[in-house]
Length: 305
Image 1 (cartoon, helix red, strand yellow):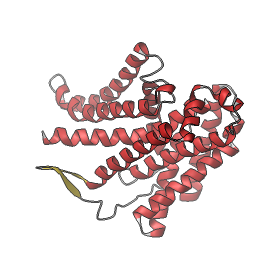
Image 2 (cartoon, one colour; image 1 turned 90 degrees about the vertical axis):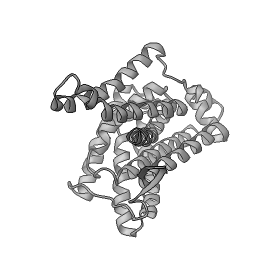
Image 3 (tube, one colour; image 1 turned 45 degrees about the horizontal axis):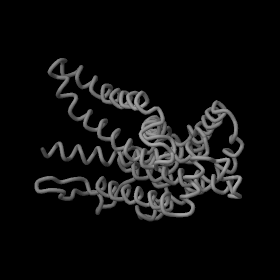
Image 4 (cartoon, helix red, strand yellow; image 1 turned 60 degrees about the vertical axis):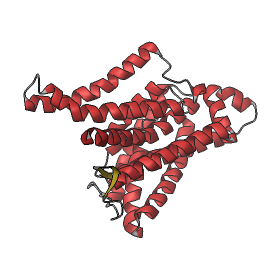
C-alpha cells in the first residue's frame, strides 16, 4: 500500500511537470498555429540557467527566479527574431525552422557551458523527506514540485478564464482573424503568449534539473510526450493539457512500477525488466490512438479551456 501511494505521488508529480511543458506548447500551437519543435530547447535552457544562477547566487530559490525571467526573455526574443518570419507559412516550414532552432540552441549551449553536463544541488531544506501519511514519507522536493505546479495550474486557469488577456487568448485560439480585425495588437499578443510558453517550459526544466543531469538535448525526448499530451487534451485547451498530462504521468509511472512484476509471470526476469518500460510507453500512444478515434479534436476543444 505504501508503495502504491508513493508511486501515485510520483505519477502526479511527473504528470504536473509534463503539464507545464504541454501547456505552453498547446497555447502556442492553438493560438499562433505554430508547430514549435524547439519548445524542448527552452526547457533545456531553463535548466541550464537555473544551474548557473544558483551557483552564482548561492541560493536555489533566487537562481530559479532568475532562470525563469531569463527564459521568458529568451522566449520573447525568439518570437520577435525568428517566429514572426514563420507565421502564415506551411507547417513544414515551421518544422524546418524550429528544427534549425534546436540545432542552434544545442550548439549555443555547447559554446557557453561546454559539452559536459551540469548539476543543480538541492538546499538541505528540500533534500529531505516529509511525512505525507502515517508511515509514508515522501521527498520534500518532489512534494514542492506538486505544490508549485498546482499553483501554476490555478494561475493559468485564472489568467485564461478570468482576465482580459485570457479573453484575448481564448478568442485568438478560436478565431485569430476576428481578433485582429477588432483592433487587437496581434504581434504583442503572440509575443506574450510565446513568452509565457517559454517561461512554463523553463519552469519545468529548472524543476527537473535537480532530479536529472542538466545536459544538451535533455528536452528532446520529453517534447514527444508534450506533443502527445497536446493531441490528447485538445489543441489550445489548458484544461485538456492538465487532464492529459495527469493521465500520461500516471500511466508511465505506474506502468514502469508494476508491469515488471506482471510480466515476470510470463517472461524471464531480464526480459520482463526490458519489456516493461517499452510496454508502458506503448500504453501512452495507445491512449492517444483511442482518443483520436473517439474524439479527433482531443478531449477538449480550444473553446473548452
